[in-house]
Amino acid sequence: MQRQLTNFKARWKKYFSSFLENPAYRVIFATINHHRLLILLNIHANLLAAAFEGTTFGSIYLALQVLQDDQVDSLLNHPIIANTFLSSFLHEFTQGQLFIGLIVLAVFMQFLRHSFEYIGAVSSDYLSARIQAQMVERIFAQIMSFTFSCASSYKVGDLVTYINQTAYTIQRQIYYIDIIFVTILTIIAQAVVLFTISPGLSGVTIIICAIALLLQKSLIPRIKRTAKQVAQVRANVYKQIVESLQALRVIHIFGRQLEARQQVHELQRHLVPKLEYQSRLSRLTKPLGNTLTLITIATLLIIGYFMLRDSAAVLPSLVTFLAVLNRLSMHLNGVTEKNNRLAENAGDFNRLREILEPEGKEFSRVGGKVFNGLKKEIKFDHISLQYSEEQKLALKDVSFVLEKGKVTALVGGSGAGKSSIADLLVGLYQPTSGVILVDGEDLNEYNMTSWRSRLGVVSQDTFIFNTTIGNNIRYGKPSATEEEVRKSAIAAQADQFIREFPQGYDTVVGERGYRLSGGQRQRIALARAILKEPEILILDEATSALDSHSEYLVQEALKEFQRDRTVLVIAHRLSTIVNADQIIVLENGEVMEQGSHEALLNQGGKYLDYWRLQSESQSSQVT
Ligand SMILES: Nc1ncnc2c1ncn2[C@@H]1O[C@H](COP(=O)(O)OP(=O)(O)OP(=O)(O)O)[C@@H](O)[C@H]1O
Image 1 (cartoon, rainbow, N blue to C red):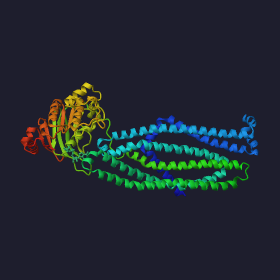
Image 2 (tube, rainbow, N blue to C red):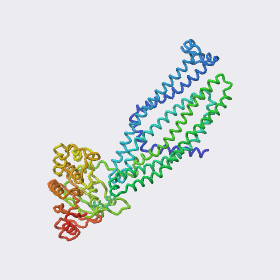
Image 3 (cartoon, helix red, strand yellow):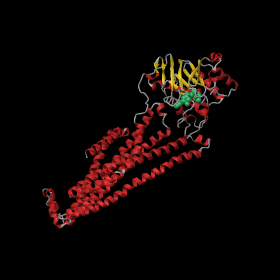
Image 4 (spheres, helix red, strand yellow):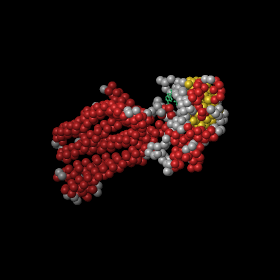
């Protein structure tokens, strides 16, 4: 017995600590704390609803008692009534009038009960709406606060699922908790009525109900386990579908539609038996509950008859007792059923914990020194980078200096580590060893927002938002005037094609708007960077999607723009970087050669090979 008690205590302790440690609940409590009036309204409305449920049956019990001739006088002479004004007032009525009056009173009590129940339900929905909004925002904020490397380690499909499921999961969680709370209050009110009528019979009822509940409770852990598995398999299916939808173009090009369908089919095949098992378990609770109820009522009728047969009010007592008990069992079934639904929801709810808890995640650092501009140089000091433990080093002991106002070009084959250097400079990834010194200070010490506000980045993949072209360019500087936007578009050789659209700069592009070619997207990205007037410009194959003529024009514009800026350029066409102040040749993550165009040609190494290769075939690429 002692051991069972200790086990019981330990289980509850574990349950409550896991409950309190779940960050999703912390968000819920924080939101509730902000809306105390709503929760107070909810609690009071539900308490009143429960109280009116109790008084309804009190009225019915009295009405049935009034029907018995010998009970009217004893009722009117009851001390609660006899000493009040009600005594003379009630004596005016006939037996029939008293009966009807009490039944009308019971109906009115039910009306009040349902009115308060309605207020309770609406206040709970209001709270739920606020919690849903708060939770979606919290999860989005959480994802946004991850470092880029941490966020990009998740599959987009996974992140979309987190956001997608949140509102619905929270809605169900709050709904079930509220319904269980309301029903328990109602059950308490009904229990009070039962005890008032016959404590002995109520005691017997409790014993029978406890046995019934225990039987049903053994199902819950299994339902929970299955729900978790179903949620996991569903998430896998969803992830697979989202990934295929994102890769539609590639799937069509490679004619892999059938394989994509088969992958989804394979995952679904695991889902169906799990859903069937889940159904068998959860559907069992209702027939089990109903059968147990029937057995309970029959037992109580027999025991009740023996216990109450000597009492004067045997009929009203038994009738009211059974009527209340019937409703109580209905509510008990409701609690069990909602508890099962809550257990089913646990799978989805726990998935929120996965994304919300800080363990195993990397967060962007806030604070740090404000970057007020480059004074002298940026130094890559013995930098190595390894993206993950399973991968080889992407950069190995790389050292070089980007001088203020100078153009540095990175050259090398595919996978040599050029973009990795650019990403380190932006602060998207942290070096595994070594340090990036900005005017002698570790880049990590700087406030990233102030650092990035001085950077302009144009990379190979350009994201175009589903808004106007003007707004897409303005992303680099939200306060820019139309004139400034246009100037930067001219500099990026984008103005002409933009004006050819019927709505010009107001043309909505992106998902549902006009489709832009790769070159057009790159020029918009370039205009975005130019508008920002960055002090440090990073061009990662920024003109790779342009035809030779457009590239020439953009290069000309860039020449002007690059003046007095510190530039890191990654180029595949060597002709575009011959004038760079410094060229760094990378291979397999290592610096092979370093110097000006002329110096490197004279050195007769890797750079000369690249140069010869490109000179032979002007259109061939280095990478
Ligand atoms: N986000 C990432 N996660 C894991 N590995 C990465 C990531 N980005 C790059 N790598 C790996 O790091 C190495 C260097 O890649 P990087 O993109 O820097 O090369 P690159 O010279 O820019 O190549 P390319 O010219 O083809 O763009 C490659 O082996 C690549 O697979």
